[in-house]
Image (cartoon, rainbow over all chains, first blue to last red; front, side):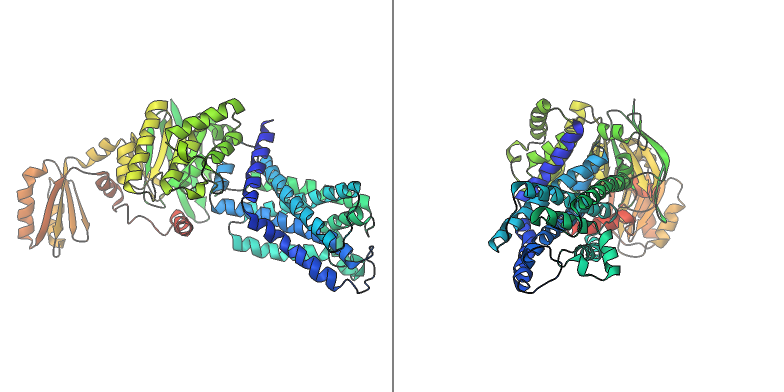
Length: 253
Length: 329
């Protein structure tokens, strides 16, 4: 009961902050929207093998949803660094609460904002001609959105628990985020990559997230739905545990 | 009863020993001051006692709970007001307090009334609905004190509670701290590098320098060590010969030179002034002023550490951190 209160208030605080900074919402969905217009429309007429969908745009939409959530998760990690810099992290860390509750609270708020942003991207894509699936399809897509959020918010928290400055965090994240993104098959079918690159794709958890989203939104994907589901769930559990462990052993100052 | 007990508490950051084998006891209900220059180890000690960092070695208990083994019990029994603001400026004052209440598991029916109580204690009722980013420095500090009290801690840590505040606000905060201690009997541990603050508030003062304990006693007992009075002379030329004479004089307890200012401590200074002035004439010192006063904590600090608090270590860990963050405030 008490742990739920802690998770709730951490979530509520982030929601209030999110609501009070509209620029953050706009900023976070601009890139995926531009990608959809620029790439989706730009490559729309080119024949690309292995798409599993009628147009490049509809292939791209799940990828851009995945990307939005990936960036959102990393941003949540970054917000821990801001809390550290502005001192608020001490208020959180000095409280008599289990560290796993702190991590879950962050993941809950990171996932909520990530899913909201991703839903806006999905709705916008209909204006470009993307056909939204039925309710069960969209519900399944939500599940995968949450998986991706949990995994990458967790990853962001693991790094944030050990890093003291924003520059270092930004640098490491750039080295990780772009490979995660490009290897996930968000932009191109992973079947088109050379075999050795494909091996890396199968290590990237975002691959399974994006493939799961494709299965949910388009009804067809390269990796089967059950495989994507199981791999995503396993990664999610792993990242929550890792986040909790790293926070338990981190020093707040 | 003993509220805080430490035994050889030590914290090492790589090569730097920030706190070196510190042992002391704080009694329940007292205001206990840590006095020392920046980098003396005050904040590091507080961070260890508040479970934010783990000690390298040694042992400490708060209200009988071990700070390493019983971290949750320790966290329940303490309130902390950190040196740098630890508020969420995007939330209102009230929201910051609500956040705290839920983090500390306060039951819903107590939350509202307790928030009203602590807000009125620091006279912030009217401002509680405003975003913290619109608060002044003094208001933020008061809100933090209110928040530190929310869950009725047994021990309250105040790390440099008036750092960067103007003189009037500082007096105001001092009054809150005294009132708080008198009315609730809460144990308060405060760190400061302001002599007047330590003197005005603390029942006992622990002087820290370079991570170690230099002295621990009540302010008046500390001053008594110097005995009697201080004669302070300002000279317009070289004082070396004069100082040598004074150091050889039997009734002078201590002699300290800071540029061209000489401080001599002794009993019954008013009867010694003629002799001292004669000595300056004999050694060719041209005096620009003479001043007799009671010893201050400043003099005590100089007596124990051989330097003024302002000269104190500035090339250390804490001071660096303070500089880095001051730009952002």
